[in-house]
Length: 168
Image (cartoon, rainbow, N blue to C red; front, top):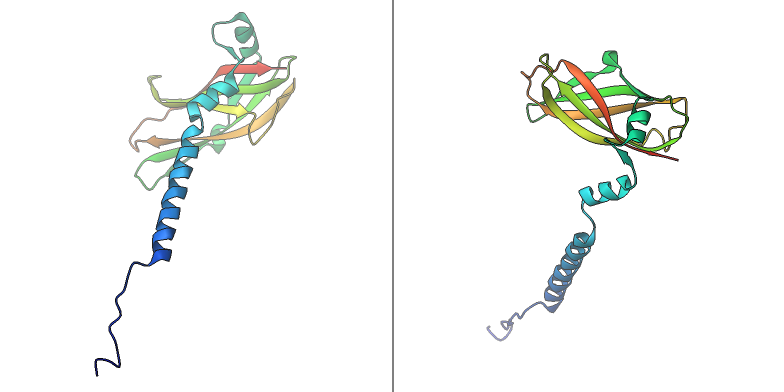
């Protein structure tokens, strides 16, 4: 009876070994390519290269011509799955200067009733989804989110501050 069903020795499946080697090489190649990309901070610095920043007379003059108004009625707070609070903050940015703004970076912050900063972040709002440029005497509407607030935190007021400007 043993001769009718001979026991076959199973070897290594060559196709499976080749597929595993190919997948390993592809994953290694993908990791190597991703490591060549500049970091987000480096990309941000490249975008902001040549922008006017705090401390220069041109910056101070232009900053006075940019009006950011928070829409307090439209500001919403939502709980997140992590037990924190996320704020969605709509605002209007008006360019009262005679120059077209091609890049605008602002610092968005939330302060408590003692005017102490709770949370803040820097955001590039132009160019963005709303506008590529901000022409003179024009207004754009934006919505930014800020998350990670403790539910018990005193979120009294939103503060906007221009931190970098590029003009044409």
